[in-house]
Every structure is written in structure tokens, then in C-alpha cells.
Image (cartoon, rainbow over all chains, first blue to last red; front, side, top):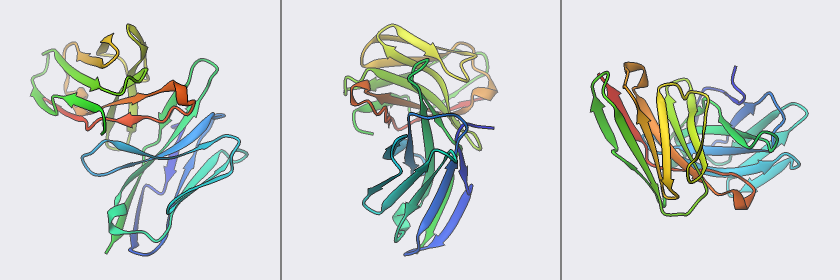
Length: 113
Length: 114
């Protein structure tokens, strides 16, 4: 299985609700990042959390990291229809052997207006 | 997609023909990457570059080669295209000076091999 695996694969919620996506990984990481991809577009970097951090906020985004469980979660509060997109976690491992970024398969979020 | 362009954006080609995709950046970032994106697989790294003429393989490099003769350009070549290489290809850049290695992506190239 992959280094980063998102859960759930797909999520459908009403506008105004919170959306939570989870990411699990297998090896020690340098940092973990979350990206968003709108249909037909490239990925856009959302937020980065380092291995020595437990929680970060950016606007309506809240990311947590539990290195003991090798897991992270992305919370989007007060979702909007414009948040409809796929969300990917990316784990960065290194520096031993050089830095490598590994993307998960993503969570598809659909926010209904 | 600031500062990163990919060409062509769409291409249809026949099995067995060579194909070259171009990634151009204006950010002067050191690292450049080529990924392919397929349903159910997320993004998979094909090749990456850590400087001019410095490249290395990713997890799905078979059938692909790359070249980087200038900081701003990173070329991906399919030596002899196969139907399994039908995919959406993304170029990305990152700058090691920040220490964070976040990546910035181009708009993608949709390649169909018939």
C-alpha cells in the first residue's frame, strides 16, 4: 500500500458543514503537506505541518499531525461549494537519501449548495 | 499555476511514436518534477531534477527519459509511446532554500496514446 493513504476516498456534505479528511502513512516523515486539486487543474499547496508540530491553522483549515499514530487530519470548517475539489496529502521523507515527496490517492470532496 | 507552463496542454499520438512534453518555469526554482496522474493512483513521480543536468528516477520511470539543459526548462520524453502512458502529466517545481519543499504545479498535459 502507499506511503500516504487518504480516508475517506469520497465525501459529500452540505454547505456550512465541516469536512474532515484523514491521511495515514508508514515511515517517519520530515513534514506533511495538504494540496487541493480542482477538476482539470494542477494541485495547489494548502498547508504544511512539520514533524515536530501537532496542529496548524490557516483560515478555515486546521491540520493535525500525530506522529505516534503516523496520521494527519485536515479539517475544513464552514464548507462552501467552492471547496468542492480533491484533496491530497503528501508526505516528505528525508533528508537521509535525499528528500522525497509521496502523494496519496486523494479524497474527493463534494459540497452541496 | 504562477510561473509554470506546460506544453502542449493536450496531445493525441499513436502507439510507437516519440513524444516530448515541456515544462517551463520563471521562478528560478532548483527542483523540478514530472508526475503522472491516473484514477485511483494519485500522483506518481516519474523523474525529477535537482539542478541543471542533474536528474534522477522516480517510482514509474520505465519508458520515460528527461533532460534539463537550463534551469527553466525540464523536458519529459516518451521514447516510444504506449497506451499505458495515456495519462495526465503534471510538472512541479520547488525551492530547497525554504527548507519546506512545498511544490507548485503546472496546469497539466493530457496525453492520449491511441
